[in-house]
Length: 274
Image (cartoon, rainbow, N blue to C red; front, side):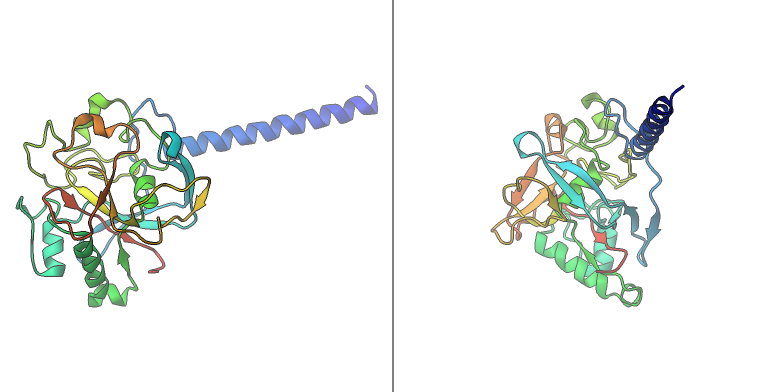
């Protein structure tokens, strides 16, 4: 065999090895994120922690995903990990921090509702000021809309946010057909692929962002428009119809002073406390 043949064979082997490495990486990534959209995935064991009042959090990794759908779909890059509440804030937790429970559907483990965006922000501030939380350097806030959607879809675009088909919605969400026209204790349905409960149904969840058109093109750590009249709410509630749960989900634009029995929230804690 000539020297040229040896060189060509060596290069070909190198290319094959490189391709095999890429395949291995892709398989690993799909295993972690649940990229097969045809089946619901078992929850991924993201690191979990709890704060001084028993709120549970999961550490969400940094990543890139397609946010929105159709003509509004765009690449969103989240450059830093963040901790998000495993559950919607409960009435017991809200009352412990705020001293009041404004909810219409009473139940200590039910999500707090009849809370405005302003109320949710005040809860985050007061929770951050608790001596034990302050000593730990914990600062709480509402999730950005990008963080919320990333966690809801477990990092990947999927036709049904809980995986599988629309027929499986009752396993994951309290909605119009199964709620009995009321909220229910958090965590009673199946979690999504990253272990978050009630991302669909039960109560709508306030996000940090002002409501506005999605950006075009790739964005990094988006925080929505710089100003506006309304705030974003995501996830739908106990009264939402089945068809709403197709795709990443409706975006609701709500007055930040709105208080109704379908509005609640969950919180984010950055590991750095910033």
